[in-house]
Length: 244
Image (cartoon, rainbow, N blue to C red; front, side, top):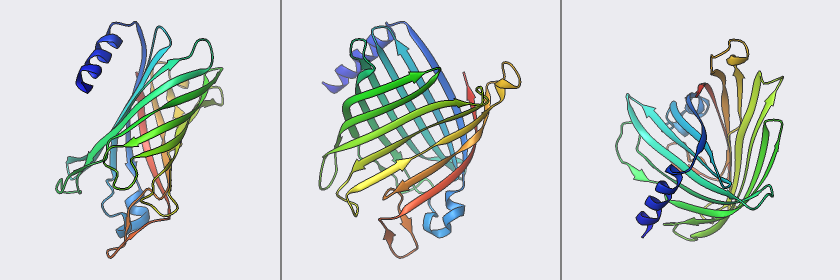
């Protein structure tokens, strides 16, 4: 049944007129260098494909795919796919989302799959002058969670153009409940700052910048003897982005 629903959704979206923007990002991650052995299994390189598409009838979709690279191979992949349907003429939409992925160690061995997560709820949007801010209030269902499958998640997503578009500031922040961690709360945010070179050279859709992954109860710190929880983690990257 799920496959039939997904197939029908793909056919429906393929038949609708679409305006889309896609970008490719390459990040060099300094997390493993910042923490040494505590994050020794963190890949140093991430390749990201990101797409936002808007359709008629108030429909829009978003997805990204992160591919983690190490030792000349892909050692992890993570994706999020979401669909929004606006409610009448209000800056509010119904939001549904899927999260999932795979990971191995840095040698491409001992692979495992992340617990699939399905989310649904309401999103509130603010758009002005090309800048945007969205707040999502979501029900979160973790398929194979050992203690609590049903939970909640709050997500903020933003995109602002600064200094007449020469600089863009974008990113997201997630907070969700997880009873497997101390304090029951996980926080993850990835703000990005980009210098947009197309403001200097017309048609050069290249941006240079980076990302700062800020998390609490999210990273698995390992000092060789134990996994530490209830701890803040900050992992910077240097990156390049090409926008189509």
